[in-house]
Image (cartoon, rainbow, N blue to C red; front, side, top):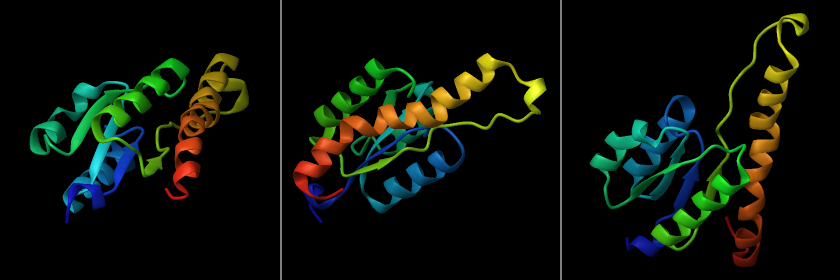
Amino acid sequence: MSSNNKKVWLITGSSSGFGRALAEAVLKHGDRLIATARKPEQLNDLVSQYPETVKAVRLDITNKTAVKAAVDAALEAFGRIDVLVNNAGYGLIGALEEVSDEQIWRNFDTNLFGANKTLAPFLRGLGDRKRG
């Protein structure tokens, strides 16, 4: 199958957990991947194993400029993005009186607002192509 028939994925939070497992499955399947992480060096083994089909990109989803840079890197590397997996996030555990307002804000900034910041730049391209 030609590389144009393979999907191009962008997965946020690719360094561990579900994001890492999905990244590995995407690459084993032969699709192309923009694997993102706050510390992209944690993805070096994937890049070494799949140098033609994966690009590791630094991404903090709470930073709108970083999101745009990741989208630009994906488009430069593979020309399009077919699948966005908005996986980055984390849990905040504790009783309300045990967590600070700052901890709650950071959690919402990542899990809600960050996911929204990441989705927004993809909608137009996916909508224009009527798939994704």
